[in-house]
Every structure is written in C-alpha cells, then in structure tokens.
Length: 398
Image: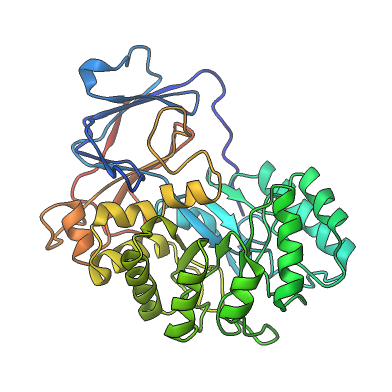
C-alpha cells in the first residue's frame, strides 16, 4: 500500500551542481543561465553559477553530471480515491509510478471513483473534507496530492461552499459529473466556490462513463470555471468549432489530457498559439480512468505537443509546470527563489536520435528520468518507468 514519506527531521540544505541545462518552467524565460541550485529546508534559496552561490554546509549534494533539471511536473487532472489504491483499475501503487514519471504534484478533479460515492449534500461535503484531510496527512512517495474536490450536486447552497472552504477544501471536482449539468446552476455554484477561494474545473466533451453526460461549449462558457477541464475530451472531444468557441470565448485555463483526443489537443495548441495565449495551456493525465493509469502520461503529453505541435520543448515543459502553478496558485512549478524545491533531473534517452534532451523531446522521444526531488529531499533515483537516461545524476554527499 501507499508508503508515506516524512519530511526532513532537521535543518536541510541541498545543493545541485554541474547542471547542464536548467529549465525554469516559466514561459517568458524558459531556460535559465545557471549551473547550481541551492535549497534550504525545502525552499529554493539560490540559483546561479557555482562560484556565486553559497553551497557551504550542504546536507545533500547532487552532482547533476551535465544533465537537465526541470521543476517537478504537475498533473492537473487525477482521480485519486484512497492512498495509492484505485478501484477504477483495481490497482495499487499508481502514485509512486507517476513519481517515476517525474510528477511531484497532483491535483484532484474529483474523487469520483469512490465506490458508493455519496450524492446527497451532507455526504458530498463529508467526502471532500475526508479526502482533503487524508491526502494532507499522506504523501505517497513524497508526492503532493491536492485532493478533496467535491462534485457539485443539485440543492447545494452558498453556505455549503463556505463550510467546505473553511475546512480546507480548495478545489471543485469536474462540474458536470454530478447532477448539475446546466449552465446557470453551474455558474452560480462556481461563483460561490470562487468567493471562498476554491479553484474550479469542468468536464468538457462527451460522457466519460455511462451515466455522465455531454458538456458542450455553451455550458462550459456559462459555467465560467477557472479551468476548462480536458478541452480535448475525456475521452470524446467536442467538434473543432466548439473548441474554438471556448478558446476565444473565455480567458480561462485550457487543460489538455493524456486520456483524451490527441488531434483535438494539437488543434487546441494551435489555437492558443494563434491567440498568443500559450500561458493558458496546462496538462493532466485524467488518470486513473477507464483507459488506465499512465505513469509517463505527462511526459508523453510534453513530447506529443512539442513534436507534433511544433512547440520548442522548453516551452512544452512550461505547460506541465509554471503554467499550472500560476493558474492553480501553487508554490511549486517554477525554479525561482522562495518556491518549493521540487525538481526532476533528466537526460535524453539512450540511443535517441536527438542531439540533446530538448532535441530528443521535439523529435517525439521521452526523456529518461534520473532523479526526482521533492521539498529538497531526493525521492527516487533512476526511473523504473522511463527509458534509461544517457547520463544520470549522483548523490555525492548525504
């Protein structure tokens, strides 16, 4: 079952040196001119050249060995239930597998696969608070799982959202997966959620499983959630005209998921680029789901969008890091002083046709993950799930 990773017992200081390429996660400046990162007690304190930063007193030194460091990847759309168990696929250990794919933070789009999920208002609130508490207490492999995302149901009133928010619930699950499927009701409840600081998303496209329904452009635009969940379908995408209507009709986040329609994802990417609004694109897997669990789903989306969507790889990485962090108000996702020290160290896969990591991703290959770090603590070394990296980092002092 899920193994919980404790935080550092005492003061910690991490130094990552010998970085070959440092990706920032920020679209406006995706590549940083630096070869060293210092983090103290789980927060980034310095980024620069080895000679210019204070690396004295390190409790952990990682030699990146000329490889690439990126912010920890964020999966904007997961469906957790309890620990690392998913009844949807009767599978255990999925979160740790995602960590091996570079994902250090996950955001729940609703704990909708809970067997016997309650639909009454008291039950909806109770389950949301339970899930928030459970994943606040449990960090599987160290991964930050932001859970407790209630699916809105008919009959909810403003006081319900105030109550959940005051209890620590920060997210709304996919609007449309419950009994609220019409624009006006959704808009009212989403506004209540926003008033109390909750970030919202909506199911977009055809039904995901029997019993759910179509959510089209009209409902999406009227509901006005913070994120247009899986605009490329989960699984079935809306017609191109409706996707264009959504992209042009609002300024909200455009989420592209692995468990969706790849052609629609590329189409959305091209629209966002035409509109000069690549900052709106964020990535998720929409797993666990009917099509399974994809540990490398976020890396696959980065590679897909870069290679088939003609986006420089360093920008595609921003879709899975800084873009999501900004849209979801997270303290990770960008390599800058003060933010959480969450990193993935990777290199081009062995025998990739690419000249370097960025070139290999733009050619459609997956990178090899050599290490993941969360809150300044090394969590995994060479990934068991990615193709083997050409070069790997090593811990030289611990």
